[in-house]
Length: 214
Image (tube, rainbow, N blue to C red; front, side, top):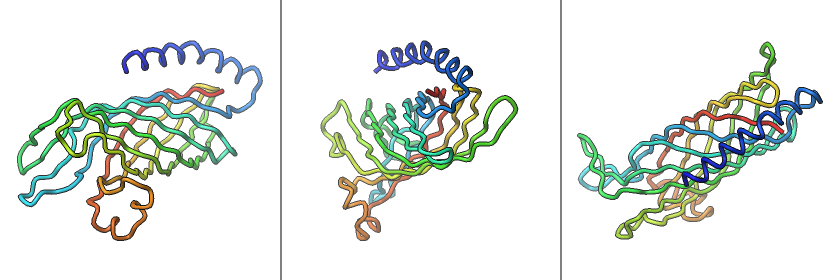
């Protein structure tokens, strides 16, 4: 995993100057964008036991990348991949107790993005909203827990803003990944009975990314 992010950073460092030069020379807007990002994710409660303990994950870092394709100046298609390393945890009234470490959380989703570009000096400020659907997968080194290897449907919605100068920019975003252990298929996520009884969790990711336009 570390080799993947190092390689991605090296590629971004080589591509960024070329992309910026192309945008400045041609004056054409970017159509494709690549946004590696880092941030922090706060996990919601997956369910609550009979004695009041809340089952969740430790909050922690998240890493990922988004690929965007502009359909119009205000509408884009966005694909997202994210990864976080955490622990299973039961939370009581006091501090939680972690009982399984090295849990990988994998996020895959596709989104529609609505943006509103505003000229800001030499650059462009673009508030945006994203919404879509995908999957969230939990993998652990220990195989003695039922949720290990679980892949569930995950809806998501986010708000953020881009600040671009030419083909280079920064992306600040807050995103809610909405899922449940009972949503193992898309049809289950849309079943009214499952929606009512699923113990839905809201997992909030706060990220900062480097946006590269092409």
